[in-house]
Image (cartoon, rainbow, N blue to C red):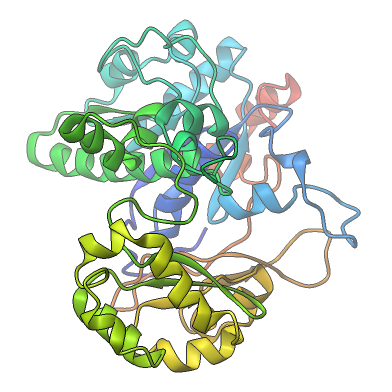
Amino acid sequence: MNVAAGAPLQGLRVLDLTRALAGPFVTMLLADLGADVIKVEPPEGDITRPQGPFHPADELRAYGGYFASVNRNKRGIVLDLSTVRGRTVLRDLARDSDVLVENFRAGVMERLGLGFESLLADNPRLVYAAVRGFGDPRTGVSPYAGRPAYDVVAQAMGGIMAITGQPDGPPTKVGPGVGDILPATLTAVGILAALRQVEATGAGEFVDVAMYDAVLSLCERIVYQHSYLGVSPGREGNAHPLLCPFGLYRAADGWIAIAAPGDRHWQLLCKAIDRPDLVEDPRFRTNRDRVAHRELVREVVEEWTAGRSVTAIEAVLAATVPMAPVNSVERIFADPHVRARSMLVELEQPGVPTPLAVAGQPIKFASGSGVPMHRAPLLGEHTDAVLDELGYPSDHVAGLRRDRVVA
């Protein structure tokens, strides 16, 4: 794959043994920044390839939107690690790579003879990263280490569900897969830190992020609330326990978010809604006062917002008071900010005559360095090219292919 000159991670080779969402999101972040990511799939492919959604015109169905979104900018090979020769190829690839990322359960790679210590013996500078539900025994033995985990498991155990939803409703899962995406992002940070350490010491490193741990870190507020006050925070709907106004308010045709807990923003909000009297009202004078009278704050703010459209409210408030419409995806696609910031990227979709959009890369550089986006690989699309780079003779590759070790 051609990487733009000057891309931040140009020259970095990453061996990607991940599947589903958390692991592929790690390597997607690295690929978007210029790393040469080689995605290793089993003969049947990543479990997300057939999950869709598929465009109505797509009769090829090589992969759907899920796979396309988090596997762009990668090269793909097929390798059967259940075979001795397949594991030998993997070891050769690891010897030639800077980073290996996997998200198997703890112990799987060791049973294959491909654990960190074994691969480090071949490549002393290797950064080996694992993102699992409950971490790796190397950094702390969890009683749950053998359990499988998905996003919903991490969200449930990490505390986020217990504080999400309406006070009189059930615990609520956050819409996007934060139980996968946050640990993935932290794993990418850990990898970059480990690479800096390798530069300084020459010694490889094992990077470990548990999905449970990552979600718990996201819920840092409940930890200090419990530690400092002895409380057990529950579901607070769309309000904030420590700030007011800070949440969602009804408009005539939808919902808006307003965040004006600071006294200056509160004063500006009162002026904008033509209620300067509220500034001197002792019930609303400070943020602490407003938190104590949050329902009254809601009443006076919604008295103004409920009679106006989202667009009208935005026109009055947005320049001075932190606020935002609650965007549907249709509004996001139409938003000029999103286009200006290249946060919708159209990629070729095999089997579809026109490109389709995926979410863009939010990390920007003033120099303009970056990577032109490329579609996700077809199953085994780059196997021959990658093995050729390893120096494998063509007849050897042909033999591996004939015996279904590679594809």
